[in-house]
Amino acid sequence: MTQNAAAIATLDEPRLVTDTGVAARVAHLVEPVLAQLGYRLVRVRLLQQNGQTLQIMAERPDGTMTIDDCEAASQALSPELDVADLIANEYRLEISSPGVDRPLVRLSDFLRAVGHEAKIELTHPLASGRKRFRGVIRGVQGEGQDALLALERTDARSDEEKAVLLPLADLDDGRLALTEALIRESLRAGKLQQAEEKQEAAEAERPRRGPGRFRGPAQQKQKPLAPAGVQTQFKKAGGKPKPAGRSRGE
Image (tube, rainbow, N blue to C red; front, side, top):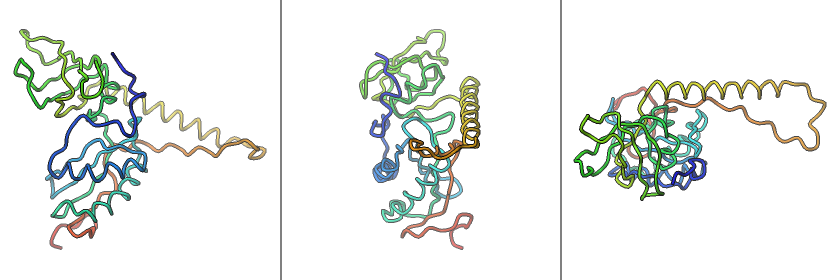
């Protein structure tokens, strides 16, 4: 049975993936803070690139995340992380949106991705011995942890089955593949959003006789989506943030 993504995409919709180590402790801390702001956690990564970077990926239930949203999340999470002191050495905090080739971590993510190509890795191999797959998502059968992902493989050899059912309970990693079709859809969505913003701006500039008794508050102009993290800063043990751009030991 195929479900509607919008119907199940809620703040409390559980993730299918399981974090470990420091990422699990950070996720446990930040998830309720994000939920209070109307966001939900997508992924936590501690990257060892140019020092340590703690990357926290978040979004609204509808899959959007604006620059202002990233800034609000950063301001709320930074003091909580300082107090908890979960990371021993200095690190850079980065809040980001999922991006075009987004991770797939919830059932609603897979439902929205029907028709697009994805890369899937399972924690345990199937009977065929394979646990890494690439293919077009054709649908989702079942609900929650019992759901099965219907995938039409694009990496299948001539002697392998193209159509497979993958148990999402064994999901280790999932991500949309950056294809031309995905980029075109993203661009169309961006153009539609820009058209809506221009229409809202034009309506706001129209002369009015007065506020009127039943006129609601003016709608806030939608900010562009943030493709990458914003408000990054170095942080170190003890909860004292260090300005970005300075290296350890200065």
